[in-house]
Image (cartoon, rainbow, N blue to C red; front, side, top):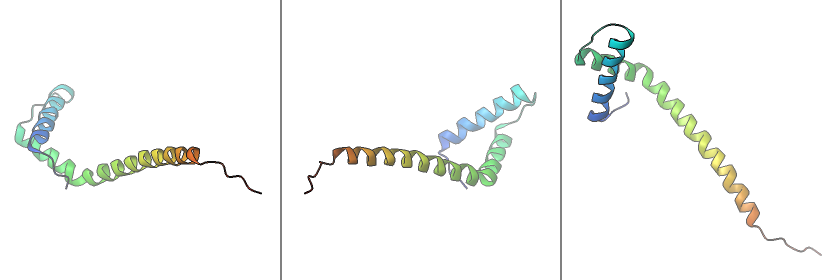
Length: 81
């Protein structure tokens, strides 16, 4: 399961409570929101984490292509006979 800092967990719990109040017309307490968050983290956290890794890998690959291009630009021409 993904571990969150206490501060981040508290912020997300508050957001869940607001969401339920505004979008679902339901009031849920902090404990219920925390249980819901824990459920999402344990059940969906791996999918989200893996997608984030894939996104980062794509960004790094793009930057590596750019670096490779810059290295080729630095090459000096060599006269052949």
